[in-house]
Image (cartoon, rainbow, N blue to C red):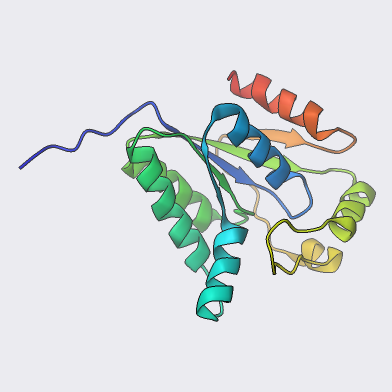
Length: 174
């Protein structure tokens, strides 16, 4: 019986934040910068809806955790892009990294300027075919629990994506 060797060098970058804060923009930019695998829960969930014609609860997240684990075990860095708004999903992302022998870094993206955030939510176009984007009212009503563990926070209000990713890279030291 062989022993599976897990890489301790791989990192799972766990993004969180409300829709329209700039999370997917920064997650994409970071994955390109690092050459990391990029897993967007919205894409997985929309694919399940389109292909299987099923209502989605946590299945998209569950698939993302498994795909992240496959990549982390291979020693590949992974960027996980999801709202990740509740304690349970945050623990699952972290446990995915731990079980895969990888490190994890929690990254919270916010937009503290409500007017700017509302404009972003109301004017954006989804790159995910078929994905119905949330309304501003649904973003405001969404449950978003405060973090109780160490995170890197980026406030994108009044910042360009280029400046925000530069701040994130500096904070990550990558």
